[in-house]
Length: 199
Ligand code: GTP
Ligand code: MG
Image (cartoon, rainbow, N blue to C red; front, side, top):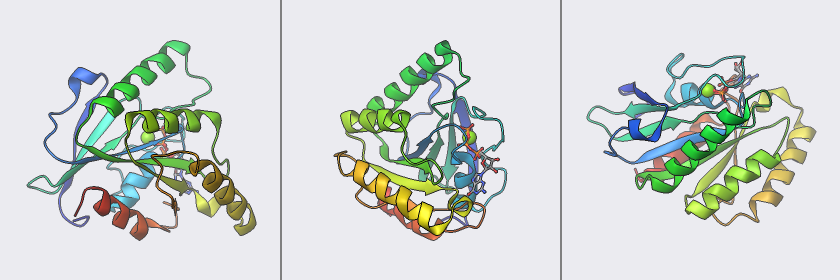
């Protein structure tokens, strides 16, 4: 599936621009700069499919990608949250867009919540986890940029994340540890994605 056709479908800055719900969907959420777009590129084995950047807040819309032709499932690259320099208006707009998308999208099968291996879960991450719990959307925690931390530090962060995840009813009990840079954990992520869309 991941070596077949995958293409950018569209960008939705507001809810009325969402593509018609034609296939199961999965989404990637996480703080700004956590590595969502990079992970989508690693997952699909395509450089430059999702736009990546050093500038936090690069992705500001919901970006949809079609997997398979004919369409099998869709991937949504969500705008990053917790961007310190974002004006309050942008933050509010983000909250509405995300909340409406998470609550209203019946085809949304699972959200992958990305957590930076260097930072662990922050209050903004817990905020989206609570949003997901309330919307009853199941989610899977994915640690990113594992190449940037030493083994011991990674183990400590993983323990912190596991402890917090236990308190969240919609969180998958296990997490996936990845590095888009080193392509670590990508096979496990692919399995989880296929499982989420029931393939
Ligand atoms: P926004 O769209 O702004 O929310 O960011 P994003 O979450 O999509 O992050 P993006 O994929 O654009 O990556 C941000 C930066 O982190 C880029 O400079 C990437 O090259 C870098 N990066 C992403 N994944 C990894 C990784 O696994 N290892 C390392 N070392 N760097 C990474
Ligand atoms: Mg991005």
